[in-house]
Length: 272
Ligand SMILES: O=c1ccn([C@@H]2O[C@H](COP(=O)(O)O)[C@@H](O)[C@H]2O)c(=O)[nH]1
Image 1 (cartoon, rainbow, N blue to C red):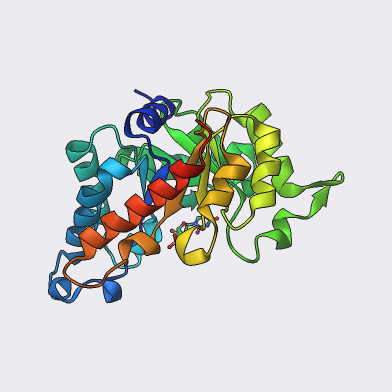
Image 2: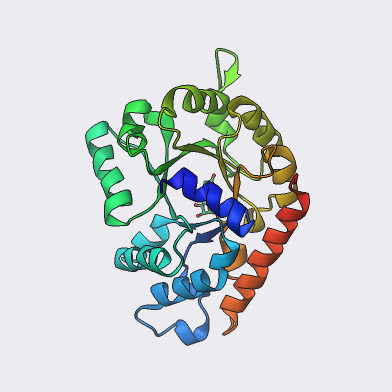
């Protein structure tokens, strides 16, 4: 089953729009894991197992593993998700983008080495830089559109022919890059107005929405501004607020409680 079909099935079967972000930071791990040489894997696996039934997807952020030399832990973690929680897709947050020949290696890294079901890509080198990802019709390509960070507007709001660049990206992805129906967009929870504007441009294309929790975005606002008419269309992603809800031995239970709270808050505001 391709990524889009898997995602839609997950939205329906598990009744959740929560995407659990996996951003390991060993300094925030509970004390009992601090001396464990495989702590990154052990921590993330515990979070995954505690939240899988609440998640429409998992989103490991590659820099959090690579900076620690923990690529092997990332590979094993994604394999664990596929084995233990089949049906929950994995989005590798890598924000790739390069000339075509190099982009081909990035696509193989994400999809073949790590076994990700989808990957985030940066569109600013143009369509040829995204083509090796777009060509993998069974995998998702999650294109940065209006990112959640405070400085997002510095370049993304610059007008081209009187239209902000992020809207140009949205329109282009929807009309030109999505021939295989495998594109999604990243739009930050911190920008409710822009969420609604992009939704109006791209119809029902799914949005990966980071920025709730630690970055202060309002999940209810996200749903009000960007859910599709059937009450889906969103992967509302939260990392730190779930992962580090407790730094004690109860970290996995606390993560589950945080993910449950986010799911329920979102579901209360979804059109049904
Ligand atoms: O616009 C973007 C794109 C990606 N991210 C990533 O999402 C998580 C957010 O973490 P929180 O702890 O929930 O704030 C992180 O991996 C970012 O690299 C984003 O925040 N904004």
